[in-house]
Image (cartoon, rainbow, N blue to C red):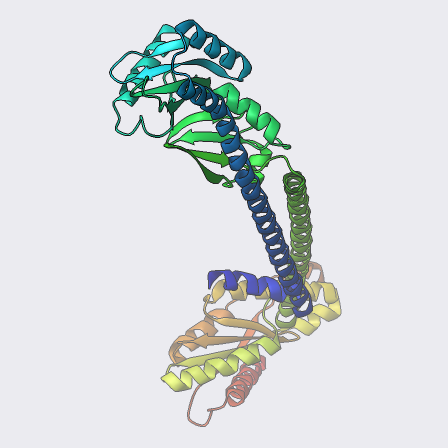
Length: 478
């Protein structure tokens, strides 16, 4: 409500047609903005859907290729397992030679050995470049794995993630030959370089990927984006997952959208959108300020013109109701107010009187001293009357050398006293000594509300008759 109360006067000042144009322009701007926002949201949603679909296809293919790569690494152990099942009489030096050859010709294989039930691991080729703590963790994991039920019947794969910065992949191949009893062939692989080489060769585009074993990160590519990069903002929240299952190992392959043409296009679109938004915001702000300044200038001009018109109107009203010479109210103003005062006095049964005043010997002053001296006399008389009367009394110049006074709330006796005081007024005339002119005096006639004088005009006529009688009495010889 308060906004409407503020806007409505401004609109009225601007004009109906201009206000209608501003409202139409605002509605078109709002509709266009909503349309652009909807179009931008649709394009971004379509781009995200395309990114997610493409990434899902890539992660599925990559998961299958990773599974084949891991199975190919198991192929070395399978070949050695078949050899040992056929020839169980190989000596330890021969087995060590086979293990050395297998680690040299199989990428990322660190060591190979034989795990027997309730016995320490026999390494044919001990894992190289591992710290003592890592070797201890690896041997402990081998011993725990040998205690599991079913480990001697089917192949198994697991990860030793101690230390966390260098996880090891361990593959077990149970031996069927009776000479070995409950035993299995084991191969240890350096998992992080293996995954680095795999993703570098398997992915044509640098897709950000990471491999998780439950909540443990086995591998994370350097391209894995944080939320601060521009591409991450474009593909925010898009992470596609696919399971990778090898024997008992259950991994999760996660992938973000790579630097494809779609991502590049959306990144450029994102930058373009930001630039356009800044330009649009700057343009709209500039237009708003221009319109606001224009409106302020118009309002300022209207205010100035309104103030000037108000001053002119006040001056015209003052001129229409004020006598220019004496500064008193004029005849028109007095007659309008006199009717109101009479109506009020009759309605509320209040006393009201009227004094008609005439300047004696005024014609002689004009004839002998000129109209300028007569004007000065009238001004002096007006000042004397204002001094003698109350502020609530209505004093006006009735015409020529006649003045009239309305006395509200004044009884006839009080009005007669006021008239007598006014008759005592004497106004000196400039140059009277040389011209032998006496001081100017006043003749006063009284009119009041009485039966038979009910109308305002009749009261004025009674005051005029009383004034005439007063002048005649003054002229009679004493």
